[in-house]
Structures are given as C-alpha cells and as structure tokens.
Length: 70
Image 1 (cartoon, helix red, strand yellow):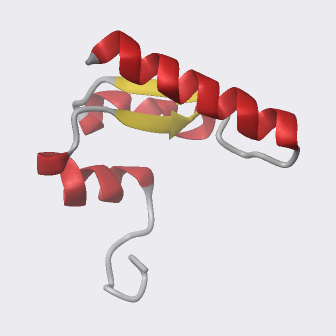
Image 2 (tube, helix red, strand yellow; image 1 turned 90 degrees about the vertical axis):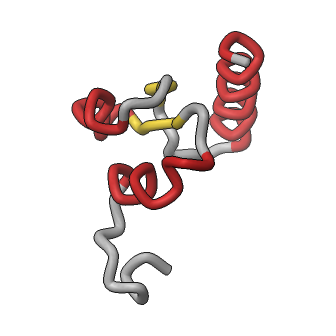
C-alpha cells in the first residue's frame, strides 16, 4: 500500500505516517536501529512468523508490551 502511495515501505515511514495516532510501536530485530528515530515506546522482537508457535509468541509479547505501557 505504501509503495502505491509513493511512500517508502519501511517501519520508519509507517511510524512517521501514523505517528500522531500511535502510542507505541513493534519493531522487528532487523529494524532495532530505528528505535530512536521513531520516538515512541518500542517492542523490539522477531516479527517473522513461519510457525503457529511464533504467531502465539508474538501475540503474547505484544499484549504484554501493551499492558506494561498503558
């Protein structure tokens, strides 16, 4: 979708585009260097989910992050 809008398809672009609506951000380990640029509380984790267990783990991490920060 971002590419169609001619916006760079990156975590930083998403954070900047929706920044006013966000109070936290989930970043993949690959993008952890963007944490300071995003300027929001961030959960840095593995977001690639190939197996059911990975989906469950990520969901639990995100829910825990949300509970701890809001």
